[in-house]
Length: 311
Image (cartoon, rainbow, N blue to C red; front, side, top):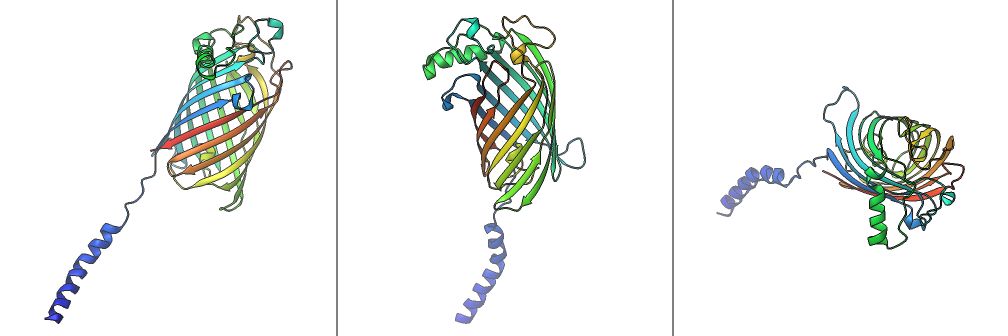
């Protein structure tokens, strides 16, 4: 009797065993193909409220299953943005005390990118509005009056209403010098922009340190499609050679703003980023230093805060 029971139990486990093993296996994790990000730039936390005063960015990204080319990983990005630029003295109505014009900008951009094993090409098209129609001045005045409860900017020298279109191309080439968990990457990323808002050439050097994915799937280049843990920091240095800056000198095709100034031909950018990817959540904390954009201006510093959710 005991032998028969043992045989029956053995047969039962033999039949059931493979099914149980199959059931206990975890389903394959689906990698995200899309992402939404909210970003806020502000200098107020650094106890200033001037020049590039604030920026709001809402971004949607999508990894393409099949794109234009047979090789490489392609991605599309769409972005809504609003920027507020103010003089150092936001209380005055005396023109002689204004070191830069007020400038608001609201824009819509689309971007296509393709990444290889060690490189990334990005092409970005931007359209937008400057002036009161951008809504940046009205929003900043409301924010100062009702939220931060500090001096309300006058916006009396705002760059006039104008429509802008721009095209921007960047190319990143990257070299990994040490493997993870504490990897080291060096990259060169030149950027060129041409249009009615900006004309510039900007070579930039970037050094990254820590745990990070390859160029085609890392948050370092805002790439979607991976959930591997990333935690690293970057140092960056760039020089922008300026041909035109509509937020200082108005529209390239003609402008009747009350007050405009000539930009410097060369502006230095220095930055620090700390970035972390935890599953489908991306976190960014950044610091930027810009040398003076015009002779009558000073240098400027601001912070970047961003959160992105992939799905």
